[in-house]
Amino acid sequence: KNQVEQSPQSLIILEGKNCTLQCNYTVSPFSNLRWYKQDTGRGPVSLTIMTFSENTKSNGRYTATLDADTKQSSLHITASQLSDSASYICVVNPSGGSYIPTFGRGTSLIVHP
Amino acid sequence: EAGVAQSPRYKIIEKRQSVAFWCNPISGHATLYWYQQILGQGPKLLIQFQNNGVVDDSQLPKDRFSAERLKGVDSTLKIQPAKLEDSAVYLCASQRSGRGGHEQFFGPGTRLTVL
Image (cartoon, rainbow over all chains, first blue to last red; front, side, top):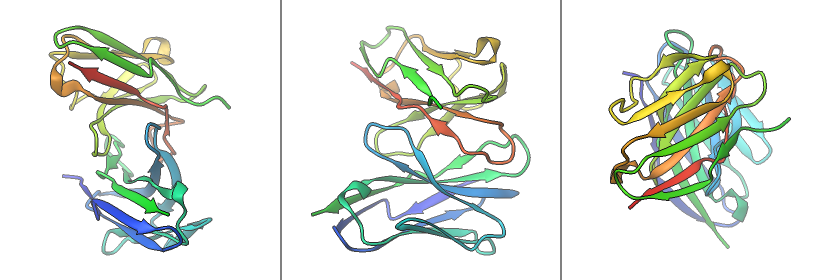
């Protein structure tokens, strides 16, 4: 069964600090992995996409990594800002079958001033 | 480019009542999804359409939930009758194609409260 596990479930950090969110998956065959940011009361918005051949990709202060061998991904946030407070959801897309994406439960990040 | 539109944004009903949600995807997007997101959890897929055909509805509680996508554009999701546990945010997402892992674009969601 395809699964995506995220950790931690929630995280509280001070503004300006860095943090790393984790995503482990068992989706196979693998196509790509996306990190979404979901602000309170809004729909998720894609931050990055990682394909099989990519190890790291940055989008501003967000850096995603992928280890396709261990089926792990991380999202690193540098110099956090209050606006980073949101839920971060890991989504893995298969390359075959019904192409149904598998969602993680998300990590809730709170950045305090 | 206009995003995914959903309405209403909020709905409060009593249990056993009926409710319907509407979604207008991004123009040209063939794939449309409905998700249920309970507070503190990730979205749970209810149904996936490819044009006007159903790709997957294995997690749709068919005794009370129904969805349609007439003409392969707009979609409606209906709950009849509603239960307390249906209280959640219902997200609609559209995608250029269901294959290749294209980005899903989400609407703002409809927050349903069942009393």
